[in-house]
View 1 (tube, rainbow, N blue to C red):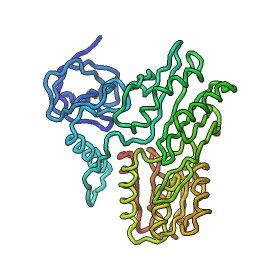
View 2 (view 1 turned 120 degrees about the vertical axis):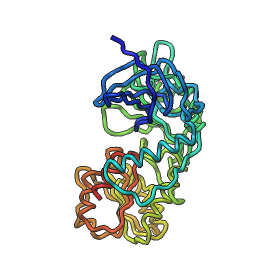
View 3 (view 1 turned 180 degrees about the vertical axis):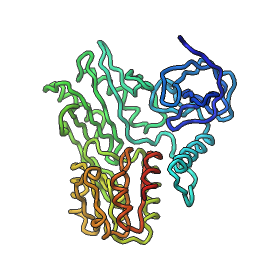
View 4 (view 1 turned 90 degrees about the horizontal axis):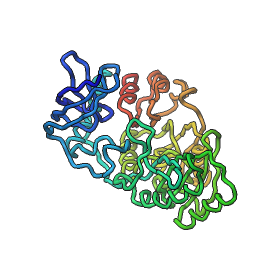
Length: 393
């Protein structure tokens, strides 16, 4: 039986859904709504504390509504809150952090205002592609679905990436057989566009020639291929080294390497890490990647020991260190989730910087808490795991 209710949205949750609370305490999670909205909604799948729900009609608007930038908003799963005004978005982000801190019992000395990056500044994207009989669908998945929304625009991404999507469809029409699929990662590097295609499709001579011709025609710095069920990446053509600059130090980036989503965001984080490190001279940089924080810290005259689990990113950082004598950096491959730095290893450092994946640094935070390190700078994309680790520290 389909159950419909008239409800009022009270807040926005961590995933961007509007939340209404029923009289019995259960919650309804309604996407694309804002606090103060009154909607007629239909109950969907159960959740641990209530139900997912879909808004059938907007009966009254809340005060925080804005105009979405993108025609795909509401179907594409890439964005959840384009319907929220800029002022209310800022407020929601800060409330999200404040609530996460409160749940863990962590009292923050200060929470600064949000820094917002410009639209059209995101420099990396991961698209899904499906080959149909006569064409290719390329874009992001629909919300909570495997259906791919065919991308016509994206105001969030760098224009160079969006401009590549139309010719990419023509390329994938050649590379894939009907019903084949692929993942496509595009990075706007400091050397130009870097393209990684992840597919199990067989690449014979003609398809490889098509890839090379595509790279030439669209001035790609590099085009590479990875099989979804095999280790390693094959470079099809590298027309020039793919580099990113960290504090004016050029790093040759391996295909698919993790980088901060925008240059503006990266710069803001680097400034925060530099400030947080204070007067520390000996620093451990954990989950260091290709040196996003290690190299600016070293360029400022500090000695940095970088630890990272991905061998290719470690090799990229080591290559820079070998050729840049002024940088006091060491780079070591180490899986910090399985083998975190122990307290006796950490005690040699004045400060520790860590920037883990979304799952956080649970075990490493425990080691840090027992180490006696005086200064710890934590960078995170996930308020829930960040505040869990902060409580441990």
